Length: 252
Image: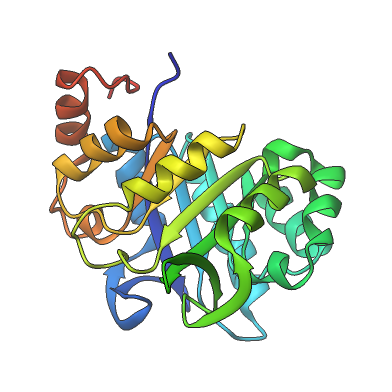
């Protein structure tokens, strides 16, 4: 059985890690390179960095960040935010990122998934999907969950897989930042429908939520931010509890 992965997520703005609820009311959560090193020592399986800075200087800053992180850690990490074309991805992968994550750019231009998968390989392409329930349907949202699209989330996820996504990072915006648990029902539905790994995101508040998401939806990985950044959950403790619940995890 494949080990379930625990993935801290670092939202990066202007070179600092930040955290808010539904991407608003951001507060500083520390130096991303320092946090990355700490997480790799604690036993995190992977890391995800999402750049939420909207400046012209952004790409240069992110390339430097990726280089600094790659020098410090020996676990895989994914970088996302503002990747709109092959050259963006190329710069970040060359700097040392293991995977790249695309979200809004893929919704606006689905062929970007095909291009990236062809250029770098399926295993490098993570498609992030922000979903929110509207009138009983899960709908893809853009701009940090603020702008609804016409697309139903499961339809879009299946299209992304068919175009060459190697992994789906699924964030429930209804759960994000609430610490009330993952959207296990929808995660299960998605996980059963696709043949690629699914990363659960949005809603982690305690250790039991991780047990629940793996037991109830059987996703491949679970991602969280603030509970890790502020020390509310320590990864070695989390992995011990998962093991006692017969959930396979990589040893710390």
